Length: 257
Image 1: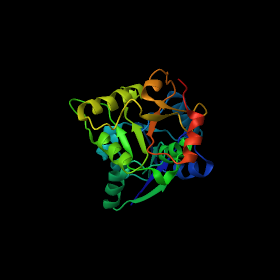
Image 2: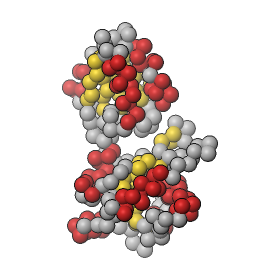
Image 3: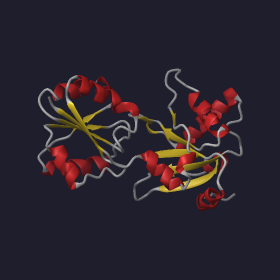
Image 4: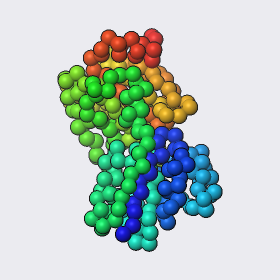
């Protein structure tokens, strides 16, 4: 029986001494590099940390993690750590891996850290209890262009709930830029015509949250598409009806003109 340790790296890819002690006890250390692509700088930071402990990092892509074989095979020889950006199980991606490990009678442990979900809501200054279903805007792929995100936004708005929109990440394309997300939202509106997205729709664009160059802006799509967003990853928030205090706070992020 081995241990599967899922270690969250937060939004800044930081590793505390206590977290490092637990990770370096593992025989094999994997780094998942697709739910949030690791930059060269962040990768260098991680490699420097683990070089000091004489432990190497094996980087895994989406198919390798979802296939699970590499990780489960490694557990036959000892404990395994899987380093994950954000908080390991906030996204459903790793639930299947935990289930497979448990079914194979392995132990599992989670080291929690900050998540884009809690951080984005905090940075937006919007009230957390007023958020509805979280939505992901995916890259269109080979005819795959689901409209369920649009429908979920409509459901949230109808019920007075804000929507956090996570933007897709692709190993080749990288992180989806806000302007592409705007085009997809407008495309769904043209297709379904339910007036979920209109000229008056305002969005928050949150960039590089949790890092030194983080930025939040608020405006209509017409205003926002004039901007250059150079510090990925990004996410969006589409607010529903605002509380008066939310209105006052959002004014500090507002674009003029």
